[in-house]
Amino acid sequence: MPKNSTKKNSDAGAAVLAWYDVHRRILPWRAHPNALADPYHVLLSEVMLQQTVVETVKPYYAAFLARFPRLEDLASASQDEVLRLWAGLGYYARARNLHRAAVVLMRDYGGVFPDDEAALRKLPGVGAYTAAALMAFAFGKRALVMDANIERILARFGGIETPLPAAKSELRAVLDALTPAVRAGDFAQSLMDIGNAICTPSRKKKGGKKKGGQKKGGQKKGAVSQPQCALCPLGDWCVGRHGDPASLPRKAPKSPRPIREGVVMVVRDESAEVLLVRRSPHGLLGGMVMFPTSGWADGSRQQRHYPIAPDSLLARLTKHPSRQKLEAKVKHIFTHFTLYLEVEIVRVQRQELGDLDADAFWLPWGQLSDEALPSVMMKVAALVAPVLNDENGA
DNA sequence: TACTCGTGGCC
DNA sequence: TGGCCAAGAGT
Image (tube, rainbow, N blue to C red; front, top):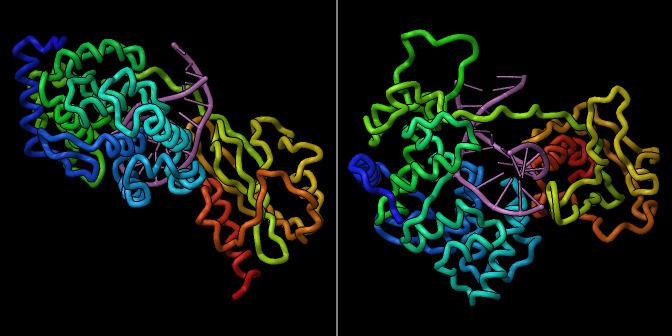
C-alpha cells in the first residue's frame, strides 16, 4: 500500500508531476502525460537504456523499430540479426535476452505482455527496474521505478548517508513514501528528467575545496557538474539541499581496473576476404564476431604469454611467414579491464589453412560493417584499413 | 554480496 | 589523461 501519507510527500509528489507537465523531455519511446505507452516500445527502449545514455540509444531504437515494428517481428528474427543491429551498443547479453524475451512472450503469452510485475520480472533481461517501468509506463500501475538517477535524487532528498549499493532498501522506502497513487509513470520519468538536468551527479574536483567564484550554471549539452537545486521542484523538502547534496549518494569504493593483453590477426586471403570467428554465445561479447584472437591474459607479468592453444588456427597463423606486425596497438577499455591488442596482418592462400572450425568463416573485406562486430574489433579494422584498402586496390 | 558485462562523453 | 558516469541484469 502506498505510504504516501504525509503532507510533505504528497506535496512533493505533486510538485514533481507539475514540473513534468512543463519541463519533460520529448523522447521517441515516451507517451504523452497521463497516457500509456506501447509495452513493446517500453521494453525495447528500457533494455537499450540500461547503463546507456539517451543520445546513444536514439538511433538504435529507431533502427530496431524500423526493422522489427512489432514484437512478433523481433521474435521471429535470428539472434545473429539482432546482434548485428545491436553492434556497437555494448552489453550484448541485453540483445540476446531481449530476443529471448520476445520469443517467450510470443510462445507463452500469445504476444500479449502480462499486466503482472512478477511475471514480467521472469522475462530474460527484465529485472526490478525494467519490470517496474513496464508496469508504470505501459500499464499505468503504481510501481516503484528506481534507476541510478532516482537513487541519487532519493539519497539527497532523504539525506541517506548509507553507501550504495547497501542503501537500496532504504532508498526504496523513501521512494514508496514519495510515489503518488496515480501517474506513477509520469512521476518516475519526471524524476529521471530531474536527475538528468537538475539533480546531476557531482563531478569531483581533485585537490581541495573549490573557491567561491565559480562559473554560473552554464548548462552545457550534457549534464551539469553540480546539482542545480534552485531549479528543483523538490525545493526545501529535500534534506540534502540543506547540507552538501553533491556528496550524496555515497558509494562503496571500486576495485582497480586490471590490464589485459593479447594479439589479434587479420587474415587476408588471395581474393581479399578476411577470416572471422563467431564467439560462443555466452560471456564476454557472446555471439559477436571477431578477428581471430588469442586469449586476453593478465598483462601484469614480466614475460607475457598470450594463451594460444597449441594446435589452434591461431597457432598455425603464428608460424606463417607473411605475418606483419603493426606498430600501433589497439587500446580498448571495458568496464572491468583495459585491453591492449597487438595487431598482425597475415596474407595466406586459403588452402593453406586447411579445414576451419564451424565458428569461422570468410567475408569480403568490404562487408565487415554488415557483421556483428563489437567496437574493439572495429578499432582493429580501422587500424588495418589503410593497408588492406591499398592492397585490395580499386 | 560482489563480480561480470561495452561503450562514449565529460571534466 | 584517467576516472567517473550512464533509464541494470545475471550469476
